[in-house]
Image (cartoon, rainbow, N blue to C red; front, top):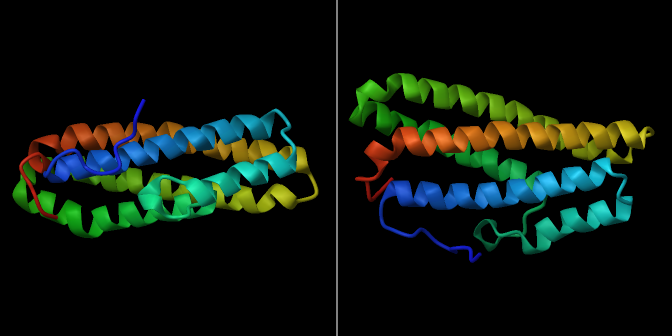
Length: 167
């Protein structure tokens, strides 16, 4: 399977789907990391995988670690909240309830991202097993909620964004 490095078209929907593909890909990396954490992978191996995200992470060719990934999603959702959603409300007032749900999703995902960040910091704590389980649980819950959000957002906003070429 090849990964597109840029949007496949010129619409805002194309760009949104391109960003979401990168988010999904990195979420799979996080899920794989969560599985390794729960099966007792050596700390050095976990750090190596997180370092791999940092040195070869696909998000915009930046050096992204697990923590930077969380910051990226926070920033992406912040931009949507400030720029995209007000424009959608203006262009398609009937989508107000959809935007309300998306904003609520962003708050929920933000809390989950904060849990992942806190769990990563606890890996060097006294109870390694508890820290590992906490991180794995946080990563898996983030993946479930964020993947559902991405799908809903793409589907619900497609009618509006498919015709927009500039944000």
